[in-house]
Amino acid sequence: MADSVFIDGLAVETVIGVYDWEREITQRLLVDLEMAWDNRVPAASDDVADALDYAAVSERVTQRLQALKPELLETAAEVLAQMLMEEFGVRWLRLTLNKPGAVPSARNVGIRIERGERP
Ligand SMILES: Nc1nc2c(c(=O)[nH]1)N=C([C@H](O)[C@@H](O)CO)CN2
Picture 1 (cartoon, protein in one colour):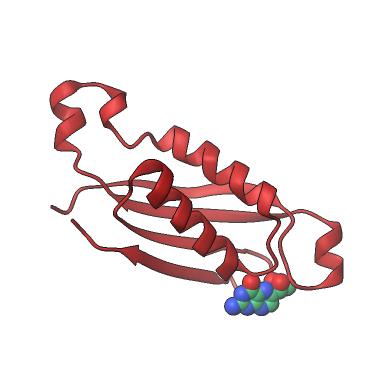
Picture 2: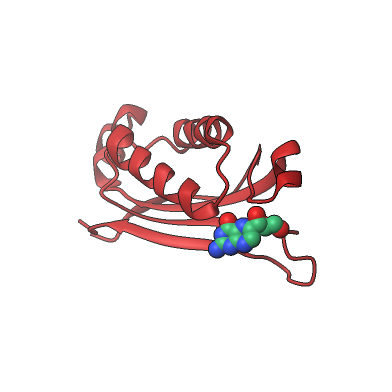
């Protein structure tokens, strides 16, 4: 089963970073998520209650990041992965946190993790 639900480029303004000046401002993170989900079930019922609701996930990810105010992208990624598995029943996910502009000479920087087992 290779089905998934994805979110690309979710923009979240939050306090993030290891340096003192970064604790005084908000910066924009872009969140890319791919989450394993059996889309045959909502396809058969035509009911969003059977789907992995990308709108609900987007809202929760934004809330969690803004409350967490992490120093490291790595911390943010682990917290989000655990939350998605516990709260939404996601069994496998790939999560990329982009912090564009953090290294001015680079087009983009960030981290990527995969957690769980693909069903
Ligand atoms: N692997 C990481 N490296 C760095 C991080 C990070 O979160 N993970 N963060 C910083 C600073 O906050 C940087 O973004 C400030 O420009 C440096 N390296």
